[in-house]
View: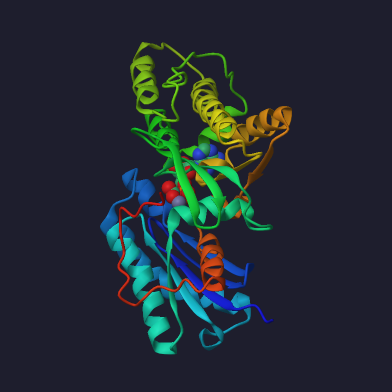
Length: 330
Ligand code: KG4
Ligand code: ZN
């Protein structure tokens, strides 16, 4: 059977992204980042984000189609992220996908952004029973994945998300937005043991995370330091974040009996996080799957992958499907 073609759009926050897939095969995945714009304000301004989605979406869509070698007429379905995210950003992508679906008489498929992240490590294989760790700028989630669409919450953050912690602490250190990749790079030359930052809720006995205390701890320490190497601060606070993520995830795996860990979201690009998970899962005989780097940060290919699974199961969305900025996965 010929694989069906899907055009997927992601505009939940500050990346305007379009992908074309043939079944689960990614034919094109284009991302126009607004990072330079938001670096000026040190964070995302919703109105600025949505205006730029409007401006960028058509050219990005045309680029993705050209790279895929297909036209809109060839598409069998149109998908878009319907939440969670910024309302005014979500509206741009879903309106475009619905418009294309209506005009071409093809189905529309609304996708949960978090399901996109969660399933991205399984791009090259089948979704298997596992513990999913989604670590992004907006979320830190531990999820028991029994199969496609069968998810149960294990835990999550009670305050800042892991990526938010990287960004906010990085900002305190004068690093540009988003700070995560800069911290990753600087930490390579830093001493991880130079500063003993708190590992909040490490032994709380549950699967909750808290990263706001770490941020406060860095904020109070900085004025007291006569001199410091930013590399040491980055390496030390990154280690505190990674320690907690690894420890809680491995406890979650033990509680489920699964033998696979699937790690996704922007923070899963982090070099030290990958190194630690690979070493510790390896020692326990657990399989660890990471999303490929281009599928870690926000992109439309991960939305298309979920849409392909939904299309194969006949799970289409009515045209009345609305965006939901607070859409939950579990
Ligand atoms: O998944 P994503 O693109 O967007 C959300 O859905 O939030 O994640 C963006 C987050 C940002 O906080 C960014 O600083 C972080 O991922 N990030 C990293 C790295 N690359 C991106 N954090 C640590 N190390 C990295 N290499
Ligand atoms: Zn995301």
